[in-house]
Length: 184
Image 1 (cartoon, rainbow, N blue to C red):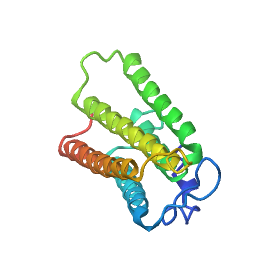
Image 2 (image 1 turned 90 degrees about the horizontal axis):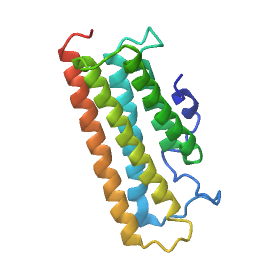
Image 3 (image 1 turned 60 degrees about the horizontal axis):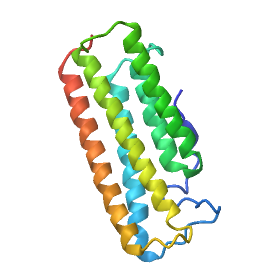
Image 4 (image 1 turned 120 degrees about the vertical axis):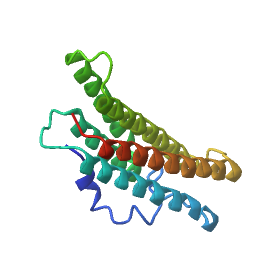
């Protein structure tokens, strides 16, 4: 269900800047090493988040929304690693959210239980991750001779750093709450 296994063959993605829309490697000068560092931190945060979700939930039943959540994290990582498929991955994340909400409606859930509320929180984290991917794509597109200043690009890098840290913190707090209380 998850696309993570397909990303393991892309050994260059963690050390080089992904191709721009023109198909050419983004020729960032040395001072833009922050871009690569931000991307690596984002990849690490998403991988760690997926591991935490996987260990916190029982994934034996593929119909559970928890399984959809793990798939969403895999799609996020795919979108970050491969800019050319980011749109497709983000669309799939939207579909994961829709499927999960449909699950709640089919069960007649009015007031969400504590565990379901935690899951909703995790889906919110996925949406935050999708916003980060969008920022990374904007950062990537800035290299396409768009006239964006270096200062604006560096400010965007700073935002990506902050978002990556916030996502990691949210996931950790959500998973900590999950492991402290018994699942339904």
